[in-house]
Structures are given as C-alpha cells and as structure tokens.
Image (cartoon, rainbow, N blue to C red):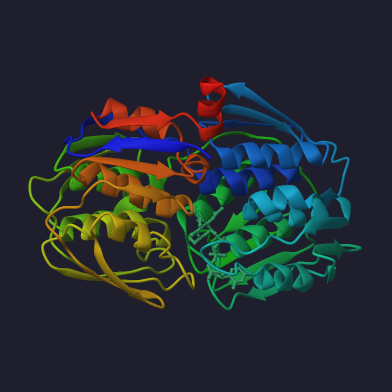
Length: 427
Ligand code: EPZ
C-alpha cells in the first residue's frame, strides 16, 4: 500500500479547481444503466471508486469507455449480464445500487451484498424494502440479493432514516415503474438533486428532489444524455480545512454556494474568513482556530464526510470542542492516529471530546478509511516536522490528484515508493 511523506508548516496559498463529485458520479453511473443509447459524462473525477464502477458496468456487458479529460461514455442499450460480482461490490458499496436499474430494465438482478466497512455495518434494509414495495420478489441468501419482478408498480415508500443511497436507489428503480412512486422521509443531499437532474435529462419525470418528499412518475423508456458532473463538496471542505490549519489563503474554484453552506458556517465559527463569489470560495485564516461543536446530520445538517478533517482542525483549536457523529455508528478511526501526533481526543461511542493543543508533531500514521485519511493529511499539514501516512489508497479512492493540488498550494508532500517497489530497487 502507498505512503505519503508530508512536512508540515507551509502556509497554503493559491487556487485549486474542484474535481467532479465522487458521490454524485457513482450514483449517476448506476443510473446510466436505465438509458438506451449513449450517455456522455463530463468532469468525471479520475479516482479509484469511479474505476470500480466502470469495472462493474463492464462486468454487466455495458459499454463504458474512459475518453480522458474527465469524459466517460456509457452505452447501456444492451445489458448482457444481470449478476454483479462480489469482488466488485465488496470493493465499493455504492456499486450495489446497480441492482434497481438492472431490475427495472431486465426484470431480474442478482447483486452481491455489500459488506460493512470501517465506519459501520452499512446495512441495505432500506434499499431492499423499497424495491420490494415497488413489487419485486427479493431473496437474500449465500451473500447475494436476488430480485425479480413481472412489472414494477409505483407506490408509496417510507424511509425510516433519510438514507442518501436508499433514496437514490429507489428513485432510479422507480423511473421505469408503472405509475407514481412517492418517497417519504427522503434524503435531501445535493447528490440526490444532481441524480434527479441527470435522470430528468434522460427523460424521467421527477419532482421534489432535494426535499424530504420525492415524486417519480414512471415512463416507458429512458435515453442516454450528455451530463456534466457537479463539483465535489467534500473535496472543497477538505481543502478549506487545509487552508485554515496552515493559516493560509486558498481559493477553491467551481463550488456551488448552497451546497457548501453547512460547513462554511462552521468554518466562520472557528474564525476563518470565507468569501464566496459566484462559483469561487476563498478561505483565509491568520490565527489558531477557535473551538466549536459539531453534530453530523443528514443534509442540510453538517456532513458526516467532513467531521474527520474538521476534527484535525479542532485538534489545534484554542479550547475544547465536541464532535457527535449521528449518521454512522463508528466514524472515529482517525482518533488513534491524531493522538500519535499529539492530539488530545477522548472518544466515547458516537462522541469525541477534543482538547485543542497549540501544536501537533509529525508522526507515522495510517489511513484506515477515506475520510480518516483526509483528517491525517490536514493534521500533517499543520504539524511540526515530517509525517508519513500509510495506506493512502483509501485517500486516492475519493480525492482526485490530491498530492498535485496540495503541492500547487505550496505544501511539501510527495508519494513514497511502495515498500515492494523499494525492495525491487534494492535488488
Ligand atoms: C452515502 O452513503 C455516501 N456514499 C457516504 O459517503 C455518505 O457518508 C452518506 O451517503 C451520508 O451522506 C456515497 O454516496 C457513495 P446512507 P450511503 O444510506 O448512501 C444507515 C464518503 O466518505 N442505513 O445515507 O451508504 C447507514 O448504516 C461516503 O464519501 C441503514 O440502516 O449512506 C447509515 O448509518 C462514506 N439501512 C445511515 O443509514 C440502509 O438500507 C446513512 O447511510 C441504508 C442506510
């Protein structure tokens, strides 16, 4: 697994351009299965998870070509297979969401159950219940979810929790059902609105995306569409934290204001100066951050995917902060690693109490998951001395060209050759 070598202390300054949204892209690629004809996706981030989703589409016999410059062409006119292999679903949970579109197109789908991961059990009960409510017969055994239907029928679906993935999955499945489906207690994340815009471009009839009630009127057929991915709000938030912890001045281009609002307000609470004009966000800081409390919630609450980088920032705040993780059962895998850098964090269940210290020190650390890795990068940028971050594949699956972007802002960061590569060199 790869390593990053990062020397802290540089004040980041300059401009970066946000990449396309990882989470938005993955849901849209699954939704592309609904369309006959060619779909062209633009501004697609070149990251591990997108590669996995492309592998998944190809495994289903769907044409999927990476043209370069962020352009991916998908043609799902023919879906040759209806079974999604375990090794791909295991690699990335989001690939499970090919089940509904396959079912809607072919009347049958068999997809391996996604496993849990470091941040929680990640069950799929809301997804299964939604698809059953639409009229599918679902059988779960031997680690696979098998769904079959004569025809999908529009209906009322109630989500016990506003799950982003379940909302997306039921939305795509309902596009080709007979009649109207209403999803109650739906998630309102920006990625839902983005998916609805994409599906509408394919000819779907969707209202209410971005609210807690989404209405889908089924149509007979959807066609390919040319669609540009929106920017990644989690990348923007992560680089905003990097600017604050290094007391820098960073501009992030290609953002949308209402999407970044939940975390921008928190940045201002810790004392950062954040100016947003059109599609550019400028983040500046010239002192230690002040403490604040964070409670992660479904959108428009504070996003669970940013509490980790924010924890790194609060680790050097001038006071005590409390982070409460309300979305996942365990999302503090970074705590032990920040402690190696001198952070004072006490984590109990879903709560972490952070006593800010004046300075972190560089250390050898390990990225246990995508956002925990992002926290370590932010901490290392602020720390005194050198840090090594191992298992950076976790970071590379969700952040496009992170090293190049950090370097362009003045960070001292480089990829260390893999251990195995070093052995080869020695030999
Ligand atoms: C999406 O995951 C994102 N992933 C996550 O980002 C993000 O943290 C999450 O939404 C919340 O915003 C992608 O879009 C690929 P959920 P998803 O269903 O859809 C429980 C990242 O770092 N739940 O909203 O899987 C679940 O266990 C990733 O980029 C059920 O109980 O999240 C969790 O506690 C991490 N049963 C809560 O709901 C279900 O059937 C929210 O999960 C589904 C979910």
